[in-house]
Amino acid sequence: MKIFKRLIILTSVITCLLSCTSISTVDKFYTEKGEWDSGRIPFIKPYEAIITSKELGWGMNLDGKDGDTGFFNIKKANVVGGVMLIYSINSIFHGVDIKQSWHIIIPGKHIEKGFVSYQEYRDYLNVLGIKSEPILYNIEHIANYYDDHDTIDWKAIK
Figure 1: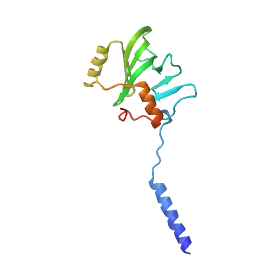
Figure 2: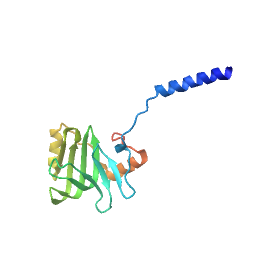
Figure 3: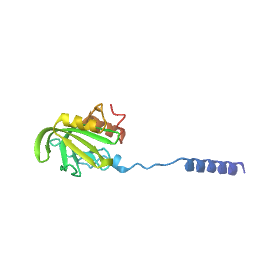
Figure 4: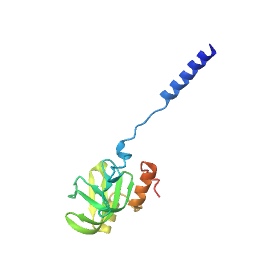
């Protein structure tokens, strides 16, 4: 009889623990690493950086809101308050080969802006109310952080 009572108590405790624990599901977009022949870094859904070859480096597809459908050779990036900030080199901008470009992408506002001038990039940050320029992290450092943590906490990257 004592064993039966203990079993009932144990079952009640397990049931309580299971019902009190909330199991949250994480969107696979933020945890999938890529295919066997490529790697990926999730930014803000649906934006992600993908690498398929060392020659082109990390690239990103765009919706074409600013006329471009993507860029490659991402060297630095960060996400701050729903704003994606990206720096790339030796890429294509509006169909022209360029040495460097800066991109500001705000998915929540359907904004995709690219700049070939650092000053234009800074000016647009000011328009957005971002007075102090956020640090852009090396893309390989971001990729390593993602490999180590299986997700990205942009505030924790150093």
